[in-house]
Image 1: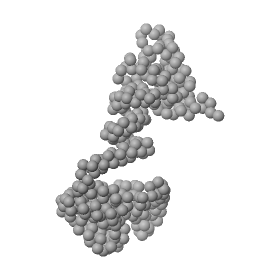
Image 2: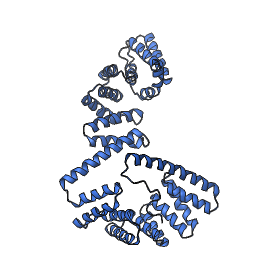
Image 3: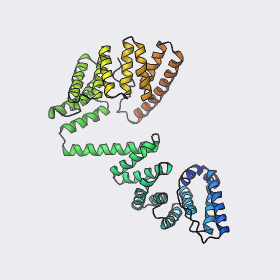
Image 4: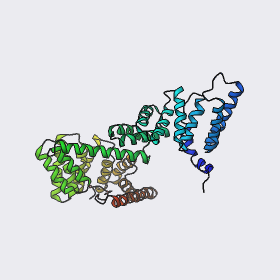
Length: 406
């Protein structure tokens, strides 16, 4: 059975992360006798040492001892509030933060913690006001992330998706691998997309854009054939609807690789380029069709053109390397494949192509390295696909090689 001391030590790391984020003005006032000031500093120092070792109970005792000598010491009171918050004593933590804010009304850290306390005490309106005021002024770090997630949750539950999106946009750059931030972003963006889709369907149920959106939904469900019907209906209603020719070409490729389908897809991609000569995606997909038709020389031309428009396109770099290999010129394939793996280190096909190329060139050690990376990425992809298949059986498995693989 865990003791209070055990629990405090386990909680020590998050307490330390938050407490050391504080930027407060120490409340040591002139009326405090010199000996008292030294004793207060001693208590604060011992409290900080306790926090660093993960002992919240000792830290709390030392902060309280400092406040007994100087009740107006904002540093001790703010950090005591943090400790109480992490111990789930939200009412006491809130009381301490209110006292701090009376002396320093715009102290963002104290506002943030008070807001999180109010949320847990069942006062969402007060919590939201405090968190919205504090969040933009917090520096990037653990406290900002936690406050942002709590604010986004309040906004999401109240239906303010736009506000939640604004918070997510601030959090994502500094938390690219934080699962809570990524989950919140996925949930908010998905609901925002669904809301917009429903509004469009109500406003114009038989418009070209509605049919285009229905087609995109069907593509995401893996029903490319049904999507084709919707894309064509959209073009019937509005022949000059921008972007649909490219999307229709993609749907055709997903639906079939037969010769007639490739010809139809090529027409759509050329129509997309006529609409927008700088459409990198359409140029890339013309290379895809040439690769599928084994016209490797023309494929090189299309991929090279796509890379002139967008040099950081890892897929075009990888396919250009594949085309050079098919032409029997492996030396020319090396550079684009290396660039592809640098641009997207998680692109398994690029590592596989590069590994097999190294083997062909007799560079066995490098070949083993790249193929090991490929195997690890493939294993991760399969695990993700299995999870999705169990939870969303309507979605097809990922094709790691893409539609351009002959």
